[in-house]
Amino acid sequence: MYKYVITIIAILATPVGSLQAADPAVTASINDPMVMKIYPDGTKVIVRWSEIGKAVDNGDKHGGSPRIIAYDPGKDGVVPIGQTTAVQPASEPVSSRLPTSSSVVAPESTKSIEATPAPMSDTESYGPEEGFVLRSAVGASFQQPLSGRSGGGGYNKFVFQPGIRFDLEPGYNVTNWFRAGLETSFIYNQIHSISNDGTMIYNGADNLGNGGFYQVPVLANVTFTYPSEGPIRGYLGGGIGGAWDILQASSDPRGAYTSYHWNFVWEVTAGFTYNVMPGLDLDIAYKLLSTPNPNFDGEGHYQASFNHTAEIGLAYRF
Image 1: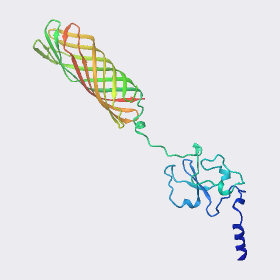
Image 2 (image 1 turned 30 degrees about the horizontal axis):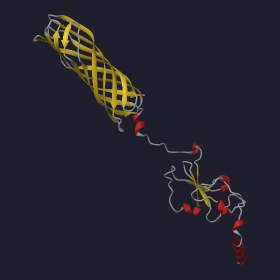
Image 3 (image 1 turned 180 degrees about the vertical axis):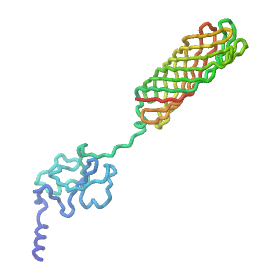
Image 4 (image 1 turned 120 degrees about the vertical axis):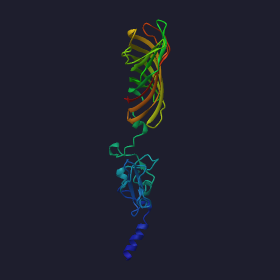
Protein backbone atom coordinates (compact mmCIF):
# COMPACT_ATOMS: atom_id res chain seq x y z
CA MET A 1 0.00 0.00 0.00
CA TYR A 2 2.68 2.48 0.97
CA LYS A 3 4.64 1.49 -2.13
CA TYR A 4 1.83 2.57 -4.47
CA VAL A 5 1.28 5.89 -2.63
CA ILE A 6 4.97 6.75 -2.91
CA THR A 7 4.90 5.96 -6.65
CA ILE A 8 1.91 8.27 -7.29
CA ILE A 9 3.53 11.10 -5.31
CA ALA A 10 6.70 10.72 -7.37
CA ILE A 11 4.76 11.00 -10.65
CA LEU A 12 2.86 14.08 -9.50
CA ALA A 13 6.11 15.74 -8.44
CA THR A 14 7.59 15.38 -11.94
CA PRO A 15 7.74 18.84 -13.72
CA VAL A 16 5.38 19.12 -16.71
CA GLY A 17 8.16 20.44 -18.93
CA SER A 18 10.15 17.29 -18.48
CA LEU A 19 7.50 15.16 -20.20
CA GLN A 20 9.02 14.71 -23.68
CA ALA A 21 7.62 13.05 -26.75
CA ALA A 22 10.19 10.31 -26.96
CA ASP A 23 7.56 8.35 -28.89
CA PRO A 24 5.36 10.48 -31.16
CA ALA A 25 2.36 8.34 -30.26
CA VAL A 26 2.45 9.59 -26.61
CA THR A 27 -0.54 11.80 -25.71
CA ALA A 28 -1.03 14.27 -22.85
CA SER A 29 -3.77 12.18 -21.28
CA ILE A 30 -3.69 8.43 -20.98
CA ASN A 31 -7.41 8.20 -20.16
CA ASP A 32 -8.53 10.67 -22.87
CA PRO A 33 -6.23 10.19 -25.91
CA MET A 34 -6.52 11.96 -29.27
CA VAL A 35 -8.21 10.04 -32.10
CA MET A 36 -8.78 10.76 -35.78
CA LYS A 37 -12.16 10.62 -37.58
CA ILE A 38 -11.88 9.88 -41.32
CA TYR A 39 -14.99 10.59 -43.42
CA PRO A 40 -15.92 8.95 -46.76
CA ASP A 41 -14.95 12.10 -48.70
CA GLY A 42 -11.42 12.01 -47.23
CA THR A 43 -11.84 14.75 -44.60
CA LYS A 44 -9.97 14.10 -41.33
CA VAL A 45 -10.90 15.58 -37.96
CA ILE A 46 -8.82 15.14 -34.79
CA VAL A 47 -10.74 15.06 -31.49
CA ARG A 48 -10.36 13.62 -28.02
CA TRP A 49 -11.81 10.23 -27.27
CA SER A 50 -14.19 11.73 -24.71
CA GLU A 51 -15.85 13.83 -27.44
CA ILE A 52 -16.84 10.79 -29.53
CA GLY A 53 -19.79 9.83 -27.37
CA LYS A 54 -21.17 13.32 -26.82
CA ALA A 55 -23.19 13.39 -30.06
CA VAL A 56 -24.00 11.10 -32.96
CA ASP A 57 -21.90 12.06 -36.00
CA ASN A 58 -23.69 11.06 -39.21
CA GLY A 59 -21.22 12.95 -41.38
CA ASP A 60 -23.96 14.69 -43.40
CA LYS A 61 -21.48 17.21 -44.85
CA HIS A 62 -18.80 14.65 -45.65
CA GLY A 63 -20.62 11.76 -47.32
CA GLY A 64 -21.44 9.56 -44.32
CA SER A 65 -20.39 8.40 -40.88
CA PRO A 66 -16.63 8.44 -40.14
CA ARG A 67 -14.33 5.63 -39.14
CA ILE A 68 -12.20 6.24 -36.05
CA ILE A 69 -8.50 5.41 -35.76
CA ALA A 70 -5.75 6.20 -33.25
CA TYR A 71 -3.97 9.50 -33.84
CA ASP A 72 -0.19 9.44 -34.26
CA PRO A 73 1.21 13.02 -34.59
CA GLY A 74 4.60 11.79 -35.68
CA LYS A 75 3.19 9.54 -38.41
CA ASP A 76 0.27 11.61 -39.63
CA GLY A 77 2.12 14.94 -39.63
CA VAL A 78 -1.05 16.94 -38.95
CA VAL A 79 -0.92 20.33 -37.29
CA PRO A 80 -3.62 22.71 -36.08
CA ILE A 81 -4.79 25.44 -38.45
CA GLY A 82 -2.36 28.36 -38.49
CA GLN A 83 0.79 26.37 -37.69
CA THR A 84 3.49 25.86 -40.30
CA THR A 85 5.25 22.70 -39.12
CA ALA A 86 3.88 19.21 -38.72
CA VAL A 87 5.78 18.36 -35.47
CA GLN A 88 7.36 20.78 -33.01
CA PRO A 89 10.77 20.10 -31.45
CA ALA A 90 10.90 17.44 -28.76
CA SER A 91 11.97 20.06 -26.23
CA GLU A 92 8.44 21.43 -26.21
CA PRO A 93 5.88 19.88 -23.86
CA VAL A 94 3.70 17.18 -25.37
CA SER A 95 0.58 19.13 -24.47
CA SER A 96 1.73 22.06 -26.69
CA ARG A 97 2.30 19.71 -29.64
CA LEU A 98 -1.15 18.12 -29.58
CA PRO A 99 -3.64 19.45 -32.14
CA THR A 100 -6.92 20.89 -31.03
CA SER A 101 -10.32 19.41 -31.76
CA SER A 102 -10.70 21.88 -34.63
CA SER A 103 -7.74 20.45 -36.52
CA VAL A 104 -8.84 19.32 -39.97
CA VAL A 105 -6.67 18.20 -42.84
CA ALA A 106 -7.24 18.21 -46.58
CA PRO A 107 -9.12 15.29 -48.12
CA GLU A 108 -7.17 12.24 -49.18
CA SER A 109 -6.43 11.43 -52.79
CA THR A 110 -9.47 11.43 -55.04
CA LYS A 111 -8.81 7.73 -55.72
CA SER A 112 -9.91 6.91 -52.19
CA ILE A 113 -13.03 9.06 -52.25
CA GLU A 114 -16.26 7.13 -52.64
CA ALA A 115 -18.64 10.05 -53.09
CA THR A 116 -22.27 9.43 -53.99
CA PRO A 117 -23.05 10.67 -57.54
CA ALA A 118 -25.10 13.84 -57.61
CA PRO A 119 -28.64 13.52 -58.93
CA MET A 120 -29.22 14.57 -62.55
CA SER A 121 -30.21 18.22 -62.85
CA ASP A 122 -33.08 19.56 -64.98
CA THR A 123 -30.62 20.76 -67.61
CA GLU A 124 -28.93 17.35 -67.85
CA SER A 125 -32.28 15.58 -68.15
CA TYR A 126 -33.28 17.99 -70.92
CA GLY A 127 -30.16 17.39 -72.99
CA PRO A 128 -28.00 19.84 -74.96
CA GLU A 129 -29.54 23.30 -75.17
CA GLU A 130 -27.08 24.63 -77.76
CA GLY A 131 -25.89 23.05 -80.98
CA PHE A 132 -27.39 21.31 -84.00
CA VAL A 133 -31.00 20.19 -84.14
CA LEU A 134 -32.98 18.21 -86.70
CA ARG A 135 -36.76 18.56 -86.77
CA SER A 136 -39.27 16.56 -88.81
CA ALA A 137 -43.06 16.69 -88.67
CA VAL A 138 -46.27 15.68 -90.42
CA GLY A 139 -49.71 17.23 -90.20
CA ALA A 140 -53.10 18.04 -91.67
CA SER A 141 -53.10 20.87 -94.22
CA PHE A 142 -56.06 23.20 -94.84
CA GLN A 143 -55.77 25.37 -97.95
CA GLN A 144 -58.00 28.41 -98.19
CA PRO A 145 -59.76 28.95 -101.56
CA LEU A 146 -57.85 30.65 -104.38
CA SER A 147 -59.86 33.45 -105.96
CA GLY A 148 -58.98 35.70 -108.87
CA ARG A 149 -59.28 36.69 -112.50
CA SER A 150 -58.19 34.28 -115.16
CA GLY A 151 -56.18 35.27 -118.18
CA GLY A 152 -59.38 35.52 -120.23
CA GLY A 153 -60.95 37.96 -117.77
CA GLY A 154 -63.30 35.48 -116.12
CA TYR A 155 -63.65 34.95 -112.39
CA ASN A 156 -62.21 31.70 -110.99
CA LYS A 157 -62.38 30.16 -107.55
CA PHE A 158 -60.53 26.99 -106.52
CA VAL A 159 -61.81 25.21 -103.38
CA PHE A 160 -59.59 22.51 -101.83
CA GLN A 161 -60.04 19.48 -99.65
CA PRO A 162 -57.97 18.94 -96.47
CA GLY A 163 -54.54 17.64 -97.36
CA ILE A 164 -51.21 16.72 -95.84
CA ARG A 165 -47.90 18.39 -95.08
CA PHE A 166 -44.42 16.98 -94.40
CA ASP A 167 -41.61 19.09 -92.89
CA LEU A 168 -37.86 18.67 -92.58
CA GLU A 169 -35.81 21.36 -90.86
CA PRO A 170 -32.12 21.22 -89.92
CA GLY A 171 -31.15 24.05 -87.61
CA TYR A 172 -28.76 25.32 -84.97
CA ASN A 173 -29.61 26.38 -81.39
CA VAL A 174 -27.45 29.48 -80.95
CA THR A 175 -28.67 29.80 -77.34
CA ASN A 176 -31.26 28.01 -75.24
CA TRP A 177 -33.88 30.46 -76.54
CA PHE A 178 -32.89 31.24 -80.16
CA ARG A 179 -32.60 28.90 -83.16
CA ALA A 180 -31.94 29.48 -86.85
CA GLY A 181 -32.91 26.87 -89.43
CA LEU A 182 -33.59 26.03 -93.05
CA GLU A 183 -36.98 24.40 -93.64
CA THR A 184 -38.32 22.56 -96.65
CA SER A 185 -41.82 21.10 -96.90
CA PHE A 186 -44.19 19.24 -99.17
CA ILE A 187 -47.87 20.27 -99.09
CA TYR A 188 -50.68 18.70 -101.11
CA ASN A 189 -54.38 19.60 -101.28
CA GLN A 190 -56.76 18.03 -103.75
CA ILE A 191 -59.21 20.27 -105.60
CA HIS A 192 -62.76 20.00 -104.30
CA SER A 193 -64.45 22.26 -106.82
CA ILE A 194 -63.84 24.99 -109.38
CA SER A 195 -66.12 27.93 -110.01
CA ASN A 196 -65.73 29.58 -113.41
CA ASP A 197 -67.88 32.67 -113.96
CA GLY A 198 -70.58 31.24 -111.73
CA THR A 199 -70.45 27.71 -113.14
CA MET A 200 -69.53 25.21 -110.40
CA ILE A 201 -67.91 21.89 -111.23
CA TYR A 202 -66.88 19.31 -108.65
CA ASN A 203 -64.03 16.85 -108.39
CA GLY A 204 -65.01 13.44 -109.66
CA ALA A 205 -67.67 14.75 -112.01
CA ASP A 206 -67.58 14.07 -115.74
CA ASN A 207 -66.41 17.61 -116.47
CA LEU A 208 -63.66 17.70 -113.75
CA GLY A 209 -61.06 15.00 -113.50
CA ASN A 210 -58.13 14.86 -111.09
CA GLY A 211 -56.81 18.16 -109.82
CA GLY A 212 -54.59 19.35 -106.99
CA PHE A 213 -52.42 22.10 -105.56
CA TYR A 214 -48.80 21.18 -104.69
CA GLN A 215 -46.56 23.54 -102.70
CA VAL A 216 -42.87 22.98 -101.95
CA PRO A 217 -41.68 25.91 -99.81
CA VAL A 218 -38.04 26.52 -98.86
CA LEU A 219 -37.72 28.95 -95.95
CA ALA A 220 -35.07 30.52 -93.75
CA ASN A 221 -36.54 30.32 -90.24
CA VAL A 222 -35.89 31.74 -86.80
CA THR A 223 -37.44 30.33 -83.61
CA PHE A 224 -37.70 31.89 -80.16
CA THR A 225 -38.19 29.42 -77.29
CA TYR A 226 -39.12 30.21 -73.71
CA PRO A 227 -36.31 28.53 -71.71
CA SER A 228 -38.34 27.10 -68.82
CA GLU A 229 -36.87 24.55 -66.39
CA GLY A 230 -39.52 21.88 -66.95
CA PRO A 231 -40.00 19.44 -69.85
CA ILE A 232 -42.53 21.68 -71.65
CA ARG A 233 -41.26 24.72 -73.58
CA GLY A 234 -43.34 27.01 -75.79
CA TYR A 235 -42.01 28.75 -78.88
CA LEU A 236 -42.82 31.24 -81.65
CA GLY A 237 -41.14 31.47 -85.03
CA GLY A 238 -41.31 32.63 -88.59
CA GLY A 239 -39.54 32.60 -91.91
CA ILE A 240 -39.40 33.86 -95.49
CA GLY A 241 -38.47 32.20 -98.75
CA GLY A 242 -39.90 30.84 -101.97
CA ALA A 243 -42.31 28.07 -102.93
CA TRP A 244 -42.43 25.94 -106.04
CA ASP A 245 -46.18 25.86 -106.74
CA ILE A 246 -47.86 23.34 -109.03
CA LEU A 247 -51.55 23.77 -109.88
CA GLN A 248 -53.20 21.03 -111.92
CA ALA A 249 -56.76 20.68 -113.15
CA SER A 250 -58.54 18.78 -115.90
CA SER A 251 -61.90 20.25 -116.81
CA ASP A 252 -64.24 20.93 -119.70
CA PRO A 253 -64.18 22.96 -121.81
CA ARG A 254 -60.63 24.10 -120.95
CA GLY A 255 -59.10 20.66 -120.90
CA ALA A 256 -55.99 19.76 -118.91
CA TYR A 257 -54.21 22.63 -117.18
CA THR A 258 -50.85 22.56 -115.39
CA SER A 259 -48.90 25.50 -113.96
CA TYR A 260 -45.35 25.45 -112.51
CA HIS A 261 -44.28 28.67 -110.86
CA TRP A 262 -42.02 30.06 -108.10
CA ASN A 263 -43.76 32.41 -105.63
CA PHE A 264 -42.59 34.42 -102.65
CA VAL A 265 -43.91 33.07 -99.31
CA TRP A 266 -43.75 33.86 -95.62
CA GLU A 267 -44.66 31.75 -92.59
CA VAL A 268 -45.43 32.09 -88.88
CA THR A 269 -45.27 29.24 -86.36
CA ALA A 270 -46.49 28.71 -82.80
CA GLY A 271 -46.09 25.56 -80.76
CA PHE A 272 -44.54 23.78 -77.84
CA THR A 273 -42.15 20.91 -77.22
CA TYR A 274 -42.24 18.15 -74.63
CA ASN A 275 -38.91 16.59 -73.65
CA VAL A 276 -39.38 12.80 -73.79
CA MET A 277 -35.70 11.98 -73.16
CA PRO A 278 -32.40 13.92 -73.07
CA GLY A 279 -31.98 15.59 -76.46
CA LEU A 280 -35.30 14.39 -77.95
CA ASP A 281 -38.47 16.50 -78.00
CA LEU A 282 -42.03 15.84 -79.07
CA ASP A 283 -42.98 18.90 -81.16
CA ILE A 284 -46.58 20.08 -81.68
CA ALA A 285 -47.12 23.17 -83.82
CA TYR A 286 -49.49 25.34 -85.84
CA LYS A 287 -48.18 26.90 -89.08
CA LEU A 288 -49.58 29.54 -91.37
CA LEU A 289 -47.99 29.69 -94.83
CA SER A 290 -48.96 32.62 -97.05
CA THR A 291 -48.28 33.47 -100.69
CA PRO A 292 -48.99 37.23 -100.87
CA ASN A 293 -49.14 37.42 -104.68
CA PRO A 294 -49.64 33.98 -106.21
CA ASN A 295 -48.94 33.69 -109.94
CA PHE A 296 -49.87 30.80 -112.20
CA ASP A 297 -48.91 30.26 -115.82
CA GLY A 298 -51.47 31.76 -118.21
CA GLU A 299 -53.60 33.07 -115.35
CA GLY A 300 -54.28 36.56 -114.14
CA HIS A 301 -54.11 38.05 -110.66
CA TYR A 302 -55.16 35.97 -107.65
CA GLN A 303 -55.74 37.03 -104.10
CA ALA A 304 -53.27 36.03 -101.38
CA SER A 305 -53.10 32.33 -100.60
CA PHE A 306 -53.21 31.01 -97.01
CA ASN A 307 -52.45 27.47 -95.89
CA HIS A 308 -53.03 26.33 -92.29
CA THR A 309 -51.35 23.25 -90.81
CA ALA A 310 -51.61 21.46 -87.45
CA GLU A 311 -48.70 19.06 -87.12
CA ILE A 312 -46.80 16.80 -84.78
CA GLY A 313 -43.16 15.79 -85.01
CA LEU A 314 -39.84 15.12 -83.32
CA ALA A 315 -36.85 17.39 -82.75
CA TYR A 316 -33.46 15.79 -82.03
CA ARG A 317 -30.81 17.99 -80.37
CA PHE A 318 -27.17 16.88 -80.58
